[in-house]
Image 1 (cartoon, rainbow, N blue to C red):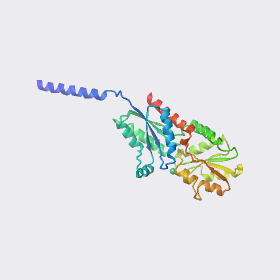
Image 2 (cartoon, rainbow, N blue to C red):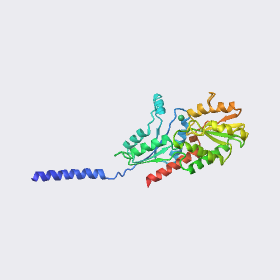
Image 3 (cartoon, rainbow, N blue to C red):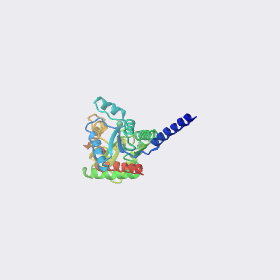
Image 4 (cartoon, rainbow, N blue to C red):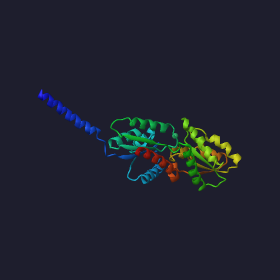
Length: 291
Ligand code: CO
C-alpha cells in the first residue's frame, strides 16, 4: 500500500513537471518574414525580387527574411540549375522547426487571384499545425482595396510621365486570369483614365486583351506607344509576349498597325514607389501579429 502511494505520488510529480514544461509560455518569441512570389527563372528578372528583398530588410531591420516561390514549374526549372527554392509550405515548415513563433507572409502577387488564394489556404492550414509557428499572418497583394489601385496608379503616373511625352500612349501588360479577380485590370483602367486617356492596360490571359485596346489608339491620334509589364518581374511574358520577335507579340502587332513602339523592360518590383505599397501591406500584417 505504501509502495502504491509512493508510485502514485511519483507519477503525479512527473506529470506535474511535464505539464509545467508544456504550458510554460515560450519567452523566446522569434519573428520572421516570408516573401512569396510566383517566381521567375529569368536571371534578368531576379533583380526585381532582389530589390524587394533589399527594401524589406531596410524597412524591418533585425527580422530574418526568407523566400518562397508558388510556381512548381519555376521551382523545378531552378532545381535543375542547382538552385533550391522552397514552396510556401516547405518554407513555413522549416521556419516552424527553426523556432519562429510569429511569421508575416507577404504575397508579392499583383492581384488576389488563384496564386494568392492558394497561399491563403496554406497559411490557414499551417495556423492549425501544432508545435509549429503559433502565429502566421498573410499580407495583401499589390492590389487589394480600391485605395491600393489608386496608389499604384499614382505611382505609375509618376514613373510614366518621367519617361513618355503626353501625346504618347502607354500600354501596361498585366497577366490576366480566369479567376474572378481578373476584374482588377478593368478596375485599374478606370483609375488610369483619370490620369490620361492614353494610359491603357491589357492582359495576356484575361480581360481586357490587346485587341480591346488597339481600336482606341487611332481615334486618339496615337503615333507612339510605350509597352511596359504590369507584373512583379519582367520575365517570360514581358520578354516574349510583350517584346518578342514573333509576329504575335504585342510589339510586332503594334508595329504592324503602323505605330512606333518603345519598350520599358522593368518589373513592378524594380520601382521603389511600387515596392513601398507592398511594404505598407507587410507593415499592416506585422502590426496585426504584434497586437
Ligand atoms: Co503566365
